[in-house]
Each structure stands twice: as C-alpha cells, then as structure tokens.
Amino acid sequence: MTKELPKIAISIGDLNGIGIEIAFKCHDDISKICHPIYCINNKMLKKASEELKTKIPENFEIHKTKGEFEIKPGTVTKKSGKYSYDSFMDAINLANKKEVDAICTLPINKESWNKAGIRYKGHTEVLRDYFGKNAIMMLGCSKMFVALFTEHIALRKVAKKINEEDLTQFLIDFYNNVKNDNIGVLGLNPHASDNGVLGDEEVEIFKAIKKANKHLGKDIFKGPLVPDTAFSPLSRKNYTYFVAMYHDQGLAPLKALYFDESINVSLNLPIIRTSVDHGTAFNIAYKNENVNTQSYINAIKEAINLVSKQK
Image (cartoon, rainbow, N blue to C red):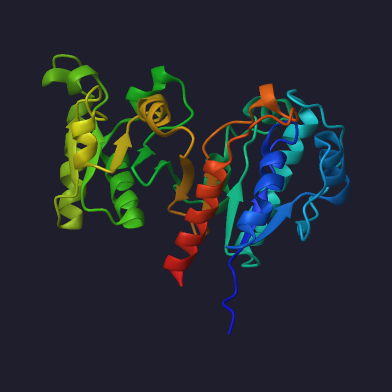
C-alpha cells in the first residue's frame, strides 16, 4: 500500500519577487516528498509564467486565491501586497479546516503589505492574531536555531518588554515545542550587564530562567549568556537552540553563518507553519538568475518532519 504524502498549502508570497520562480523550480523535487497545493489562481499563474518565460510545471495543483493585477518585477505595490496576504490567509484557512497537513510560506514584502493597508508586519503576527495564541518565531537550521522573544519592534522598546512573567511563559512554551534539554538564553546588555553595571534587564532574565527551570523540573535554560560570545564556535558546540531578546541579536549571527539554508518555523500554534528565511529579492526577480532554493527545500522538509511527529 502506497503511503499518502502529506498535503502542504503553499502561500505564494509577493508575486513581484522570487517566490513564484522558486515554486516553479522546486515543484518536481518537492512533489516526490509531499503533495503541494499552491494558493494562486490560474490568471496570476499564467502571468507569472509568461513573465518568467517558462512553462507552468505539470501537476501544479492550485487553490484559487482571488485577485488579479499586473506583475511588476522588483517593485513594491499595493496590489502585490494584498495578493500575498490573501494567499497566506487561504493557506491558513486550509490548514485550520484540516484540508492540508501544514503550510509553507514564500517571501512577502512588508512595505507592500503596509501599502495595502495590512496592519501586520509579518506572517507570525497574523498567525498569533488568527489563533489567539502566543506564536513563537524560531529561525535556523539543524546546526543552530534561534527563537526571538521580541520580533518586529523598534530597538528602543525592547528593554521595556523584558519582564519575568512574560519571559518565563515564553521559555516554558518554547521548551514544550522543541523538547531540547539544553537551551541558551542571551542577556540584553553588553557583557550580560556585568552584574548590573551596564543595566538591570538581566535580573528579569535570570529570574525567568530560574522560574522556567523550576516549573519544568529540569535545568533546561542556561544564562543569561553574554551576547557577543553566545554564537562563538565554542558556544555553538554546547548549544543548538538559543533564545534571543530581540530580532537582530539572534538573526544577524544566524544569517551570517547559515543564510542559504535557514528556515522560519512558527511554534506554539494548532497548525504547522514553516517558511523560507529570506526576502523577496526584488533585485533578481524574473531575471532568470541563479536563485538559491535551499531554504525553501529545507522549509518543506521541516514541515514534513513536523507532520510526521504529530502522527
């Protein structure tokens, strides 16, 4: 008896970017390991294929996301932003109704979403609001994963967000999703504040670590780690999973080390969602240049892996 492949809804991302080209290039390969369903309609699919001067792959099953506009390669537009959002919402709805096993998202453009009047700054914020759950943004690859305590907020607001109660719950939720027994938690300040010399946020971080470990009955979380050495080769021998206090603290080192292979995973939700960990690459969109597809392939594989763990 042939084992049924997991169904994965793929939101097509910003059609002025490289997402659709990645989908075309990888379709044959990913179809061997999953059953992809692309949230795009026939008219937009045809426009994209004509713009790319390439044929639509065979057996390219679609869920007809409504809407039509002119594709403008490499351009921020209101209509492309709206369509990428609608594609994403269709994928979410398919997963919520159990019509697919997981969703995988191709890159959006935040400025395009803003032009379209979409109040969210990214995929994770939408998922958090849709499900009423504290979705956790984790990025990385098998060599290193980074979870972000705060995400798309101004740097000046980060310190005010760090408090024992919220960070404790974040740590507990993170552990319950990844089930790893050795997780490094970064401090906020240089030198993790040098015992209060450079700030007092580490007091809250330390108390959260202690409280989360007590709740779990195990010494899971270590830290606060000094941020400028947390991702050194020696530290990465000790930890695969890290919790960063803010976006660039975790993602700058991750992307410097593993940009081409990293993915984005949304944890602590009732559905499985993975994503590429790169942008729309407007500078090379529709130019038939050598688009790197490794992040997308890895995101699909991780979605399949997470589906298998649920069954």
